[in-house]
Length: 84
Image 1 (cartoon, rainbow, N blue to C red):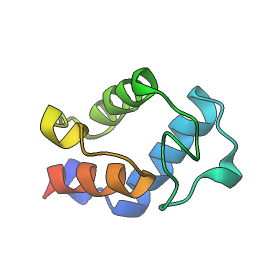
Image 2 (tube, one colour):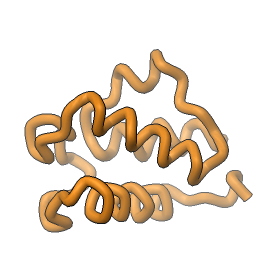
Image 3 (tube, rainbow, N blue to C red):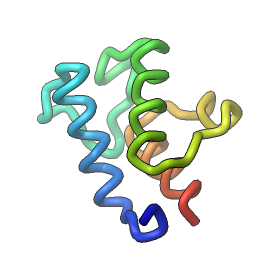
């Protein structure tokens, strides 16, 4: 299943997590949005996102990749990269 997940599906799932779980205004979410500056998330929020994306993909984001994430697009690309 995981191999057929598209970047759009990853973004949709991520958007759902941000809106439903973290109560982020959907209008603020775009690929260039900085998680910390634009969306006002903290490190605990990003860990929560990583755990939820792991459940979505059945893949774990390596800590070294996780530390590089700053934007919504970074998450999409990192998760997509796990699936290749």
